[in-house]
Image 1 (tube, rainbow, N blue to C red):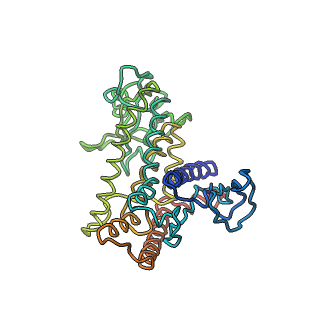
Image 2: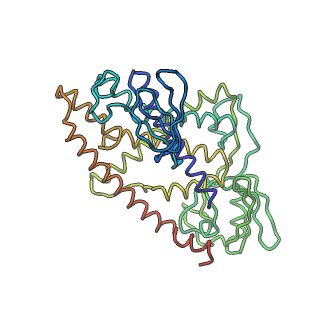
Image 3: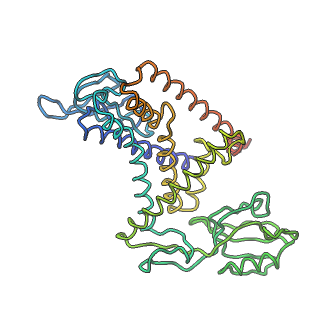
Length: 390
């Protein structure tokens, strides 16, 4: 559990850091002063800033206020993500190097840069994944130059309330053997597994699986009464190989994979928003930090390839959420730029500030609600009590 929390914090922190790095680099490139670029969140532990007179770096200890024209690079006590303090982002400073005095186009570029960086980072993660090897079925292999392993029978989906779910089989598990009464069947093809569970249905079986690098044996009883949609176990399976591509192809193929992931997630968000607007409820589940941490454990158990793919998905999720035209998000700030462009003058600082405050409160309320639901959904309290024998 502790390792899972560390992995989760590292991934989330890195995604937030990359997002803020986009804002920082774009602001600097367009002549806007960034007072501070921090790793982690305040209070500040230590920072370094270049002295404008001597040109030498000096150390700033503690959480002292700083608003110089040279960027303070800081390390902060809460090692989760990062932040950037840009001059004039609150609309007050009117100097030439202030965010507030720049054109609408420049301010748009600074605001959208975080979203762009998250998409680029997802592309890089997927590119690395293509290099080290990703699970694919033969029909989806993209290049004749790819290196493939021998195919394995992998679970792609576990139907709810089925013997497979009760046994603890997870999507991503590779099934290697099925045994009943000392009679064992090696699983090399999907037909091997389908034949074995039909032969052994109604009996107690032991199914050997590989979950990442861990071998385990799961016990259960394939059901005798099945539907046309589900077999005795209640799993969907495929013959999957680990496929790795040359580095010079990986970056290219990752573009299409990133675009597909982006479209898939956009479609899911669209269905959620439409469900809320139409009154039919959410058509997909939302996960908060607890749910994401739970999924992080599942991906880490399956191996590095799955973890990288999951991190790429989270990066694109973060990009899309921040691009939404909702107050307190980057997209909300861009919406106010659009209003400024249409009416020829900016919205009053008081009105915009009030809108962002309300938006922030609503977002925090949603986060609390989703987190509470995740605690119930994943029985977090029961799992914690189990660690202490409760």
